[in-house]
Figure 1 (cartoon, rainbow, N blue to C red):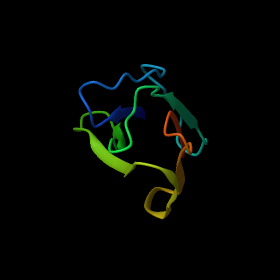
Figure 2 (figure 1 turned 180 degrees about the vertical axis):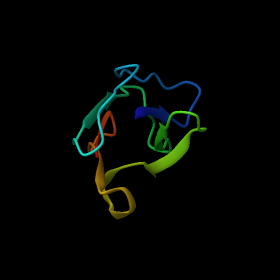
Figure 3 (figure 1 turned 90 degrees about the vertical axis):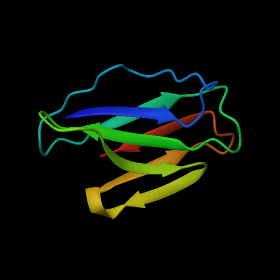
Length: 87
């Protein structure tokens, strides 16, 4: 499983691990720092399974969001400068 967060702005800088791998059935928490995120920017998380194209998992600008389709949760800090996706 490959996971990659992005910010919907060409000017935003995202700091994260470039690649996270896990095995099926094991939980993973992906933390991301985006100190230059603006209020109107959305955080997008994608996953890419082997042999497939990227798949959008979640997007939000702020707050927490349960992702029942993938048994996860996306959280964005109140100031919007960090986010975490738990799967």
